[in-house]
Image (tube, rainbow, N blue to C red):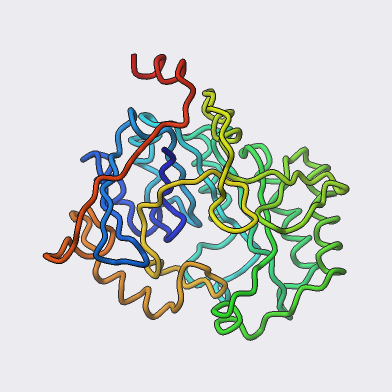
Length: 312
């Protein structure tokens, strides 16, 4: 089983004490987003967790103790650093600070287990095609020696994104081609492995790889293990990533990013954040009398010889 710690919220930044405690105690509880009284118990031990995946915009809070997890588990870290300032990402550190944190993360986890995410790519009057290409070049020059790859995607215009970002400039085919061509040229210049995420199209003509960003191949190569040849169901339509279990919760990230897919409303996320108790096995709140806890089925994706080598 693959455990995802950051798909629903920025756990590494805002809930690091809780996350470290969950792995120390060896389990976490996760509410079903559609049926809140259905709670799954997930065991967090190396014999049932094949890989721990992190995704964050600021690893600084967890950095001093991250090794407590990465020393025990196969792991992979996605670090999102974009061109946007606090007008779009209110809770995210400045670019220079984020670059320094990524370098330190790479030294701890190993560059083969760190990916830089430059997404989502969106346009406004302030964030033009030219600004994206200039910023991407600046970042690529500094981050390429410290990462396994870079992943980018173009923004998906959900209703809540349109509501939260009325200043969005709609991406045209010309915009997309110009950005993809520019990103590809920059990546080639620095020797950066660049790929798309989701259903963003095929840009292999620009040297951009179309493979999924969280596949068993990516996780296996990064950790020196081999997974069974399984088809990936994906996390959503058009996604090629391996299925993972997320121990976070939606509407709980205080970053306040205007384009966020996981938060419906930043105000709701701020209110939910107040429900957090680092000692609770749930990210938000506590187990109630009407909750039904079910043991989650956790099966390994590792090939048998890998399992025997690790645990035998």
